[in-house]
Length: 193
Image (tube, rainbow, N blue to C red; front, side, top):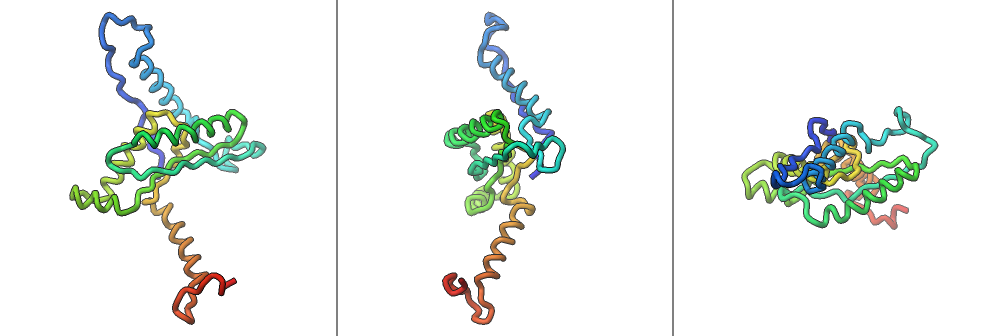
């Protein structure tokens, strides 16, 4: 997947609850405005984007740290309480490592293949590619609203050909290593060693 520069983390915070509330009072609307403003700044500046080795901005003298969350299956319902609970821990760790001087790669992806997508398509009559992309857009919006420090320039999905071509390649390597064409069957690994 590619990053989505047209998508802003901007979120409508709504109007204040009444004219009698002073404009300087720290209320939910003010908090939302502050959060949204900073999230937009982070996105515009690519604050959490990690350059690859050899690219401008990469410091090879710094240690590397890779943090990958168990990426979610993008159901149509959106995130549930367990998602931010786990993602908060990895976000804290990634931010800590950045502050300690590490090159931190913290991407987000989508586990988008599987029977649930097919079943949802049957129920709704909508092609699974459409419902999955819609759900991914919703999940991405929700995760950006949390303000997690993901490198969105490295977003990926298991439905992306650039991703699954490598899983297919790996399975072919295994198949070709264990399949005995003379016997026309797979052989136990103990016989191959």
